[in-house]
Length: 435
Image (cartoon, rainbow, N blue to C red; front, side, top):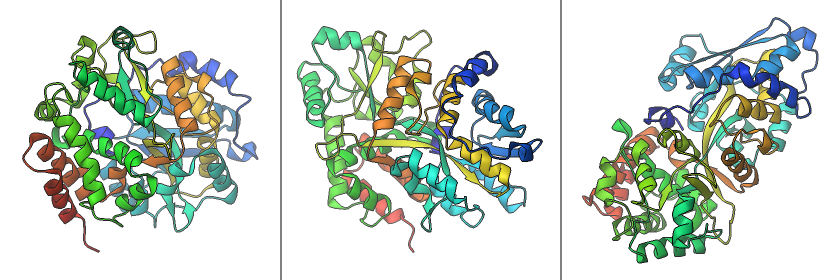
């Protein structure tokens, strides 16, 4: 979501793209799903891409297009800006849009739907074949897919210490019931179950939104979740309040959160998981991108200092998964632009990008987990590829005054004990724009 660029996140360590690119190109010859017909017609053509990724991330994105450039002779130019949200509107309104915009918020695609170009039928068919519906639904406008998922964040994760688990006799839960029993067991053993941090400067409170979304998908199901996101049920509906109260009860319980819920408000998101390494808590519920925030030298994986497991789904939806991500959206309809989108929709794009950078997970069902450089990233991709149903971050699809403002404020008010869940969620409901 767009907030991922406002958050205080450390960048993933980037291997120099050209060091590994030769291997990536060699290994990708068999997984090319792009049609690339009439490559002679594409030689010398330029396609511009503009998004929120900058510096190393933008360089890695550029490197991921090298197989396409080598094959076609076209040039894919990648630029980025942390203020993408504002700048894309300026560029579109000023008559200088990029050929492809990388939107971190699917709601923004809808905001600019009059400027988004229609994609050809073969590209739409490829998108529907290669991506789970949960990735495409948020960018389906007037019955047609208007953007291609280019990058995914896996949010339904819980970080833990394998050594601490082994010492305490804990096992990784595989069901929602087992997960809750584990949390209860940790607290009963006199330990702190979770480390939580809500601090993120102007975006303080956003991690709470992911907790609500993940728990709602498991306690109420994806259909209820969809109605909540679309405001077909109010924010203070009894079912929504129940989800918030479940989290509040856990956070306020003795041993529920290291330092207590109030301390979570003052704890920066980027630092929140670090006490886990000292044994101050046992679990940290946070997305794959948190891998960048462990202290330098921390070994990740099953034999490392920290590992992560999938937050189990419910009995009805055992693989339900919360995601975020970035969408490649056409603002020009030239043949070379559509060819770049065909490439982005192919597993080759995801596989190539996996070999030139860390932290860039592919939402493509056909992406090859073995292409990722670490076992942990391979596990993340396997979770994504088997996830069903998938639901995009709900707050990212809500109006900005709700998903990026009053929802965050509610999190702070609830954690501080200034308001009950009922009161805080009623306040959020009052901020929902009137039609």
